[in-house]
Image 1 (spheres, rainbow, N blue to C red):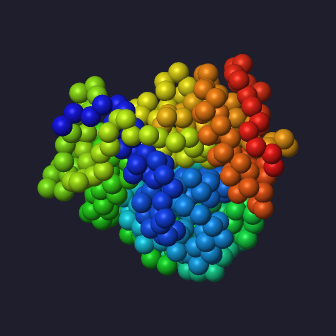
Image 2 (image 1 turned 90 degrees about the vertical axis):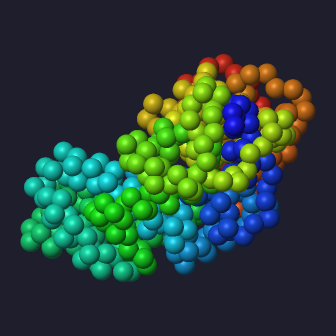
Image 3 (image 1 turned 120 degrees about the vertical axis):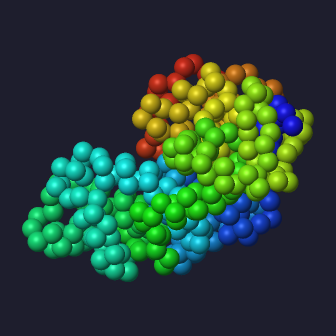
Length: 381
């Protein structure tokens, strides 16, 4: 079966619950979207606001506090929010990548510690973090274990290599500038190639269920796992996957019975938060971001701006200001689209009012660097 670009777009939007807000419970929704990019504390909340009918942010607060949804370093060596039961699998799948990026980095190597030293320290570090511990407290603990001031780079490597969760600090979006850590209830198996392969296969199936159909390059992009590992894992999943053909003739993989939608399926406007995974889940970002807008939306330092989706594709960006929700369109939009965006913006302003009316304000400097596009204030705070 051959898929068109718009069919892929609509299928992704449907699987990611962006064609309509769905009446799902919090945990079911988090499972459906696989994992939520969480560099900024507000982003998981905005991701779920866009996807769940009548989303109550207090439910996510509670889930973070009771550790049914956890925030930790996972795919792409970045912070994600995921179900607690999924975290060990996702962490095991990405273990070789995280190990190489942190324990083989020159900053950790400068400490004089070896990979074996790190592996030896992990169980005791997790024991020390059975209750929430600040970064300063765990860094001090590491110094006591090493018998002297911890060499520069030791804590830098250990804090991301060790499977530590971020402990909620009770701030507006559950997490703030002060970082606290806690050990997971189920500890991932580290440095075991067989476990890593089995967990990668599970992650691939979950990724395809939430983002498929997708290519080897797409899977590698989402996970930041080497394509060779992805291909090997897919070879063992031949009975659990199907193959399709993409618009450029590329080989795509999917789960049997995965939702495939017609290219004429309506796609309502959405205001996505920063780093929404739908913008980062593919090697070829054209599925959601028109090529001419990619460098505007994804900045050189990796910041991914909050975006407007119009007809399923990025058509601009938005920000919250003193005046309200301000939208900048990258091309001319019809009046009815502006009206639909205004309805979304008013709902967003209401959602933000009790939490952080100027969410993402620290990133406002990017707007000074934008080309001259049409900008409108769509909703008052």
